[in-house]
Amino acid sequence: MTSGSIYESEYGDRPTYPHPVGQIDADVAIIGGGLTGISAALTLAEAGIKAVVLEAGAIGAGGSGRNGGHLCQGWPNDFDKVSRQLGEAEADIAWQAGIEAVDLVKQRIAQYSIKCDLTFGYLHAALHKRQMRGLDAMQAEWEARGYDHFTRLGDSSALSEHIGSDAYVGALHDTGCGHIQPLKYLHGLARAATLLGARIFEAAPVKKILRGPRKTLLIEGGASVNAPIVMLCGNAYLADVGLPEMRRRLAPVTSSILATRPLSDNMVKQILPTGAAVADENAALNYYRIDGRNRMIFGGRASYTNVDFGDVEPDLRRRMTDVFPLLENAETEQVWSGKIGITVNRIPHFGRTDDDVYFVQGFSGHGVALSGQSGTMMAKAVIGDASQFDVMSKLTHMPFPGGPLRTPALALGMAWFKLRDRLKL
Ligand SMILES: Cc1cc2nc3c(=O)[nH]c(=O)nc-3n(C[C@H](O)[C@H](O)[C@H](O)COP(=O)(O)OP(=O)(O)OC[C@H]3O[C@@H](n4cnc5c(N)ncnc54)[C@H](O)[C@@H]3O)c2cc1C
Image (cartoon, rainbow, N blue to C red; front, side, top):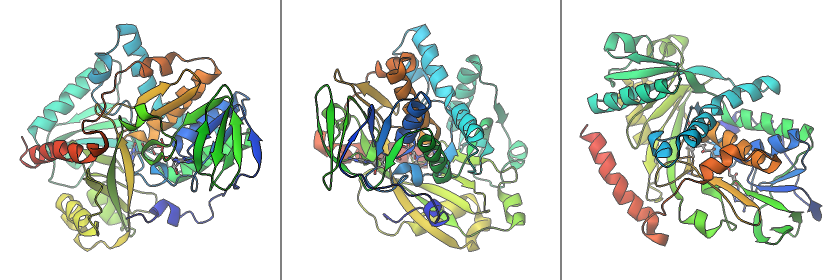
């Protein structure tokens, strides 16, 4: 369950970064070497600010190096959940912040020549009529705000241009979303940040933060970093140093992914002829795509109880062959899992303390583009443009019920949604 992802396996020559030694001074100390932390470091470095990233394991050891690679626009829930808490002008700022996420990925890939198999095309797929009505409402809401990348696929002949499966009643085809090899993208950002002066350290778990105008971050093994500003970018993996208000508002959910061995061109043409990534609309969704080596990367099977159910491969294979019976004989190359951080309303939780500890968490399985955008928003707030960060920080986030027992309470809540999806209610 805790094995590395296929991205790690195929990227054996990825760069490594040193272990920290002695006392290090910085303007900003960033905890977490995922897309949030590295994107923040890059934005700070672009502005000439001295950033230090401290990563407990290797760059991309958390969700950023083990996700499905789906590059999704906007915030992870109906935008209505954001806008109803804000005035009109602030809602516009929040919308813009979400919608810039994929553009930022595109821009950074071009600016820093990052090779990461960027592909556009996405299907938001409906398994039954209620889900299609939800997608119609989403299309209306997004188009009213100027998003013009959707095409409605309302019948099987329209669907068949993009997907060879009988599982769906309809979909929205979205040319504004797509997919990437996430670990290569992350390392491209890390290389760019380093070239601009950021310092990145691996095997650097921060065990404690001594707070004050100038903070000291104590790292296992004896090294320390001094900085006036700290950014907590550990999301569902944040260990030892989370603020109490963060802990109560985040629940970890385990999601698992299966990669097949490379499929033939002919098979790919039959199942996903336009190369679009696909996610269905279930609460515990299936999400999948064909990667740069023709492998099916099929994710699903969320566990809200954090109990290790052992071998997840049979369930993932069943899910995959339910959608594509043609893949019955496709061999499995690798299976892995990772932790997704979710909030009650599924919108990321932003905040900062009076003594300049910044944080963002809870991308709710929608973080490949958004975590980079959020890290950048945090960095911009430090540089002097806090407009987007402050709007998102205003949103109220309810704590999960159940305190330390919040994961079982969440599991009970999710059981209802899973049942509803199974019964197609
Ligand atoms: C299986 C899976 C599939 C997913 N699929 C998708 C998808 O297809 N599309 C999508 O948009 N999103 C997806 N996501 C979500 C997405 O990957 C995350 O939202 C995103 O990667 C979060 O990035 P991050 O930088 O905030 O956190 P992470 O990438 O989790 O990085 C946090 C890092 O902080 C480090 N850390 C924690 N505590 C400390 C400490 N005390 N000291 C030092 N370092 C510390 C950890 O080691 C970790 O590397 C998926 C997630 C998973 C797990």
